[in-house]
Length: 193
Image (cartoon, rainbow, N blue to C red; front, side, top):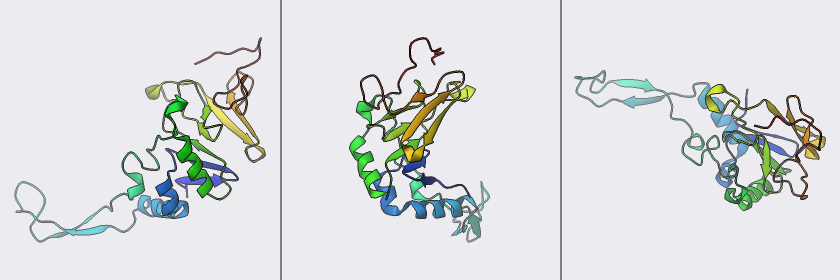
């Protein structure tokens, strides 16, 4: 059983982004409803209205149709499609909305999301509360480098791991903020992106 949204300690994991209306609906309810739908759920019985010509519909015949996907899976604000916190330009991230969501989820301090390719690699926004991890790994979507986000000590330690490079601290930069990972110290190899 793979959840649509998962909280481990103080970190919420989701493909797109958790928005206020998702929290209102209930994250566990989203997981339960998504699981039921993906496992076939209850098919909808609908009476087909048609003439019986030019298609398979026969007037008055009932047929089973697959159930519609849950509303939280559809549209630009869907939990799997939302990009409110994913823009590489942090000024386009809705940090106020993210804070509202995190405060509404007990114990949540940060959200890890994919769905929007980050050309610079794994990075953060909103003072480290939005961690964007989609590096476009597949050849068809950017052919990005292999990277991983390491979360230790319930989020007290966040590091970006890249093949062949020393880990990068995601909590600090030279300026003391958390918007971009700290670059390797002088003399460390960096193959870039």
